[in-house]
Image 1 (cartoon, chains in turn red, brown, yellow):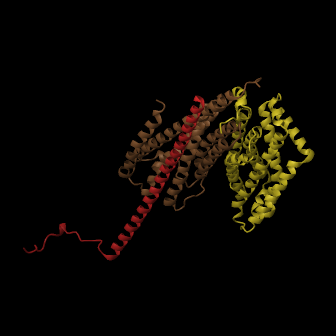
Image 2 (cartoon, each protein chain N blue to C red; image 1 turned 135 degrees about the vertical axis):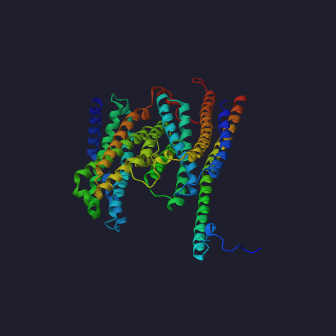
Image 3 (cartoon, helix red, strand yellow; image 1 turned 45 degrees about the vertical axis):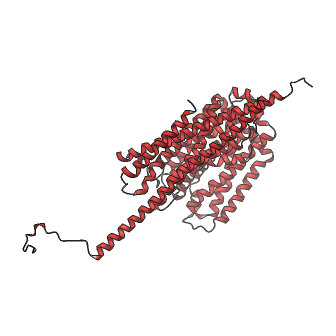
Length: 82
Length: 229
Length: 242
């Protein structure tokens, strides 16, 4: 089937943005944005990790103190029953 | 019931936290100026609020301890001070992480950073005095905590008094609705975790006091009565 | 008014004792001189334009160091001869003891600033506004030293009355006095650079002063002596199982 000739130009949209300069510019912006996003996520992971690590470390310290208390209570009970 | 409360708080926080993270990363829009790294805000700001709240709690408990010689208030004061150190360290580390990503500079010596650091130092001094102070220094430490609590509003108003590079206090007030939706669950998750740890630490401190008195009573009972040969 | 009069009498007594051998005055001013020389040597290479940025820090760091030394020594004497306990049981208002000690500390600190401020003016051309505006400089120095004395006296006294370790004084003093010193730093810099907001900053420093003294006076008795129940329990104080 042959392409229709002399089509009216109302639907015609010229293709734009495919010249090398525009493509290079867009790619540069995209890679800069991607780098920023990657860096941002790295910062976010560090920040969230730090917060929860601090709570976890404090929790471990409390757990160790509780263990010490249990030992002392057992010791005291032994002394009292002796 | 009292034993159950910290576990309930931690359980609730464990349930809320994943939903919070999902909300922050999947539903909340990316902030126009700062980009993705602004999402640190959702934990940094509630942590700062909790730090200031705990500093005030420590100061008030210290006041009650001085006024009424209350062991319970003293325990709350110690626990709150230690949690100020934990949350304060979180604020002081996440803030520069955010600053480094946003402004390229981690520590800018602006008034808000400095004041938060000072508050942390004051409560670090409190914890040191409690650990290494001689007998009778409990009251001194309580005085220190009261001064620290009074410093909290000074920190809050430092942003207004000086021009700083820190985002102004109005950030939280002018947030769009979708961002508030992520901030509240984060605040609740962190607050529940902090409260649970606070309750556990208070109970441990009271146990410490009770053990002290038990050992002293045991020692005193073992001593010969006056007049015995 | 009774408290103020008692405070004045106690302060005059302390100053009179000090005037006998001048130990504290001489050693503190000598220390200020040494610190001044060290600062002069350390920062001699700073350009004139940068000096207004560094001089406030030099001044108030000197005050901070001398203040810590002074406060430790004022109460060492009390502790050695147990005179603090004697004054606490005397029929004087507790707040007047606090005010007297704070006043003596402030006087010593002002004496040290008499070395430091002119010294800085001589060593650094950037400190010339200190000489050009002596009244404002004097007001600033008085307010800064008073703020330091107000906060520091409470804790120095507290450590002296317990068998407290002196190292804790520095641990407590520097963080607590930093907010006041921060206000003083900003005010000093605005003075050196000729900002019109100097009076605002001086006002804020004054407000910090007032707050420090009100809180310090309010806490003095509870921190030093405790409330009646605590005094009864003193026999058990300090006994721990470790």
